[in-house]
Image (tube, rainbow, N blue to C red; front, side):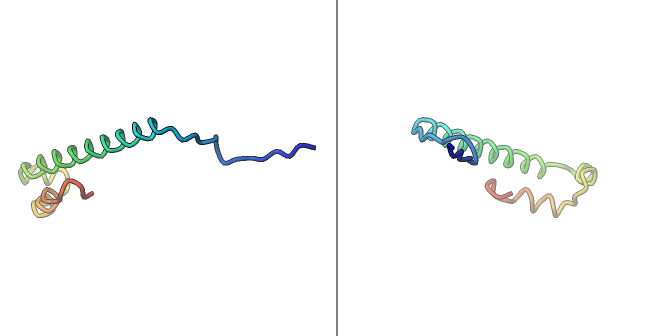
Length: 73
């Protein structure tokens, strides 16, 4: 009787080009996220007190958030 071996997933084949493309895409996504954070924080710093109250944060919290480096959540 033949023995059937179950695997956790499909076989993974190492493809250097695919790995390179995946790395570039991940870095591109990271750069895009960082740019988005910086843009949003810059816009947040420009909101007046009425708009900040509408989104539920005070001037101090907006200031702290807008001063964070782009790479921090």
